[in-house]
Length: 270
Image (tube, rainbow, N blue to C red; front, side, top):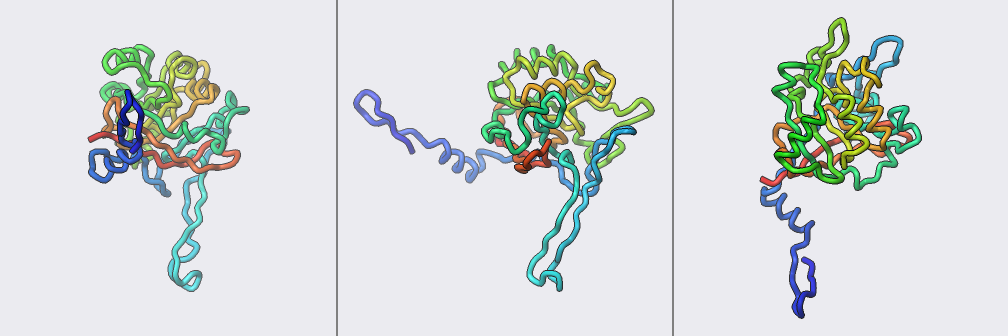
């Protein structure tokens, strides 16, 4: 509890952290896991030749209650920074090469209000659907302006495909076909919107067909260049309200890291 002197009397105010703990204990605040499981089966982005690709995630056993270690079980792993549900730091892209690596991201940027824009119906009709500024303006008319220091979470229903590499990447002879964000919308989110970053359910923040955009990969180009962030391969966005959730992201503090697999959680008021 905290106190505040007002008009000659002491007003007792509840401590915000105590209220949070009480809410978690009572169940009036729910914790929603937005993270996909990370294993050898996790879908990974596939770049065409001659570009190098991230390796398949692998876990190697060190010991398991045996002669290698009689009382303990542990593993070592290998895999890319951008595997599974992961965080994109600005240094990941050439436009942000002089900006933050993942270890330098201010911790206050890893917690913030979240807004969820739902375009599941549109993405089911058109897997190449692109979020526009008009979509965001329509959302704001209904739910209010994007909060300062918030994360924009873009729901497309793509997490339903997250256990199937082929369906998740949805590629054909012309390349992958997954929803993303229109060029001018990505520019606006980077330069004008008061957000910290963008989170998506797909393998990357950009549309599958964005390799052919001008510029290519506009979310990476504009957002990371503006020292903002990306968050990909999210789960359970269907369980979040359009506004009112708090997002918590915990990437590994990798020195010189361009990104990191992470645990993403949301707090919601029941």
